Length: 361
Image 1 (tube, one colour):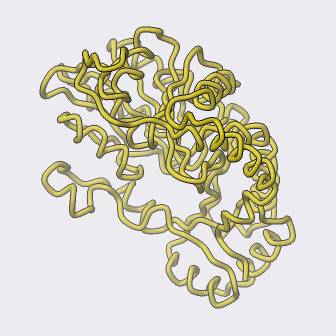
Image 2: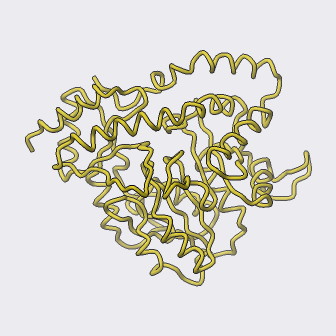
Image 3: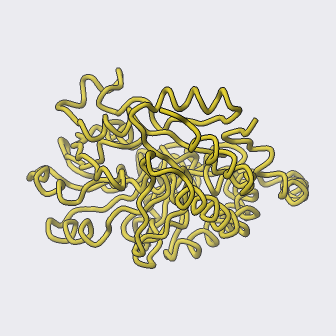
């Protein structure tokens, strides 16, 4: 059986260092917002080529706090892709604002820059883009629109640690929001998230918001949250960050096999010299996706669907999202995620390829 994911196998190479770090952590007696968080924040800011990083409790919290820190007026609208994980839209709604959905480019699955301006109104305050599956959005056009309309740019980088557009890393174009959920390329051993930025005042606001709205103990200047990156998770992330480039390069090698060897009956990810893709997810599309998924499972290969239902079809979104989003729905109805974890070998991927190419549909 070729598993889709196995976090024990992914992290096994780091177990000894994790144990050593945990021993130091537990003996330190300092368990919240200590030296390990400070250290990781500095390291991850450097990795992302930003001045600052603030660790928070999850990727969703990163998005919620990022939007909150801007103090947008009531009834503000935030543009967001229709093809995304629901957390991106939840963050807008949890702040009391209005999500304005824009369809993706069918080839990249990311928000289509050519469709954004039609959705901008006098109430638009920000564009929240998503670098889905580990591919950067088309940042030239998006940055130009942000500048033209004087909007804020928020990047959902939950799946794209280290991805680049024209050599620039995601999370450094605007305000970067990251998840360290265990399955991510840079995954913790629990929940975790971070926000990257270059503005010191904005950084200080996020640090206050994550800690009950307090910058000085027992003095609360903002209506804040309890959303702090755990000290122990920060230590684990510092260890894993050292091999993140190795993880990325390994996944890119596996992706190249899929791209070169997999039959063209399957719609594969597009490749472009301007994009450095990190392949958190390697997805293909096929109109008989469900039959293909069953066939692969019958042949000992586990796959996943990211995601089976588009946001506008979710029950929780009925009162918040209007309109039809056929491109997003087409993607959700046909996409299939293939095994591409750090523990997978080239032999594993070739087995997947050979079995898929032998499918007679």
